[in-house]
Image (cartoon, rainbow over all chains, first blue to last red; front, side, top):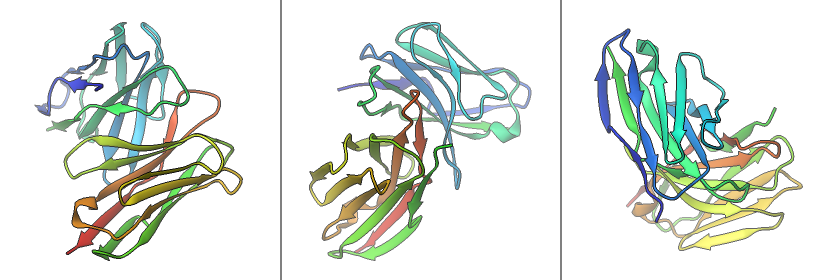
Amino acid sequence: DVKVTQSSRYLVKRTGEKVFLECVQDMDHENMFWYRQDPGLGLRLIYFSYDVKMKEKGDIPEGYSVSREKKERFSLILESASTNQTSMYLCASRVSSYNSPLHFGNGTRLTVT
Amino acid sequence: ELKVEQNPLFLSMQEEKNYTIYCNYSTTSDRLYWYRQDPGKSLESLFVLLSNGAVKQEGRLMASLDTKARLSTLHITAAVHDLSATYFCAVEANSNYQLIWGAGTKLIIKP
């Protein structure tokens, strides 16, 4: 079974702090994704990576950056956390194929105060 | 721009009833995914539909895809309480790796 592990289940940070959200997958998947999920807004793609050191902006990249130095790890960075970044963050991975579903981590609920 | 619309967004139903969730999308695609999310949990893949006329079934859930109508349906047969969850459809854009998500259908099944 694919396992996608997010480093924190709950996180509370202060406005202006730099925040790192880590995601690790154990199935050698090429593609990795970061989404945020907010009530009434569904899932919105922040960034995705289709290979090591490759990244593409999603729909809402402002205020975020990502890092993919190793195939199994995809990090989301909030450069200067703001209260409007309070949300559930979901990491996902899949093989590099148009036919494969995403496998999601358990999510990180981030609160910025 | 690819858009995905689900309806209804909220559905409250009795056990043993049948119902259908609809997923309409706005442009050509032949790859559609259904996911389930339980409260406070992450998303779980249910079905992958890859061609026109594709039908997949798992227990009381059956999903189908009509690429000509740009419509997928998720049919629930003789609902049971355990199927209470939020169901999402997602359509894969043909030109890149992105999935476009519906807003989700919150399904509550009352005993």
